[in-house]
Picture 1 (tube, rainbow, N blue to C red):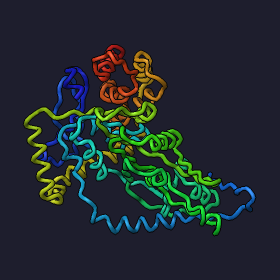
Picture 2: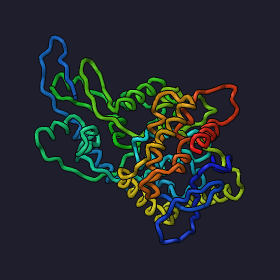
Picture 3: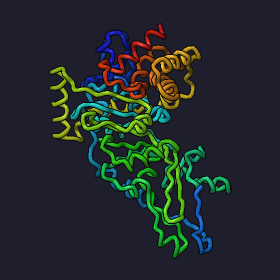
Picture 4: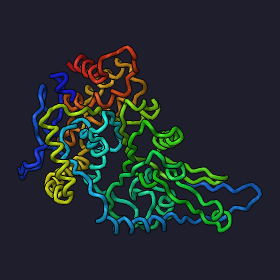
Length: 419
């Protein structure tokens, strides 16, 4: 952790004692110089083909999605058990970045880089139990928000304009895995051209980007992702819209998601354009403490032996963490950050020669999300010190002769300006 390296930087401890039975809601503890072990956890366009007449269009995507929802409910009990988030030992930086993105999805996701076998994918997938419920339009394949036009599919928007009453249901935020070998059609969705031309029906089968709208898109080993899929992700991440163009027919839908990627830096670098799309960057190292390593092995053995019993033993902690996340999400809009702190954040970015303004925006958002997690209505300098290395580390220009970790450079500049 950054705090243990510097001895002066702020850090948040997420270390967890599995046998702790305190009935109180877990709290965040922010310290300077050392880490205390506290639990916290809080428009579709159809263009006529030349020489053919225009035809009426009816979407069949809604029917597909309704079947998917029934299947999802039926298979919920038979899903593979997920390791509990609150049972993960250490890796505080990674866990904090993930929680802040759940609290404020507009932070823009997180890139997790580190050694193999350090629990990166396990931690990300364990997040699924903590994801809160959101309002969605029933039967809509894009998880449209009934209140925000930005997150509405075109058909839902037209229904609103026509004054139709939308049926609204509560649904958990989706976490979608993007496999390395996925085809572009599977990611973007595909169109049945024959059906569209012969029957006059827009038969669009939504892809992974449609499913991930208003949710999380997770790419394991993202640095090994094929270039054509990277281009698709870049386009969707930049515009928040996925456009499918096939044979003169154009179909689009909202695709705003939290992009989470993980990888091992030894296996290759990530393209700079995609790296910049991640709001935060977490570095994960191998645990060196022998006692902690033994504890991790024992906990994993317990989970492998009896997953249900192991998960049940963490129910209380998981529920407390869910409550804290839901509370932080609702409290976020009331958090304020002083103009003086905003100016200092931008000064740090400017003096570090950070390209663009994305670093400034993400740092402000992450600091407010952290304050909301701690149930405070004002951002403090300590909040900024905690998140600024993760927000700027991957945005610094690389110097091949530089041996100092970029996170340390950011912290040094932070204390120089904020002191």
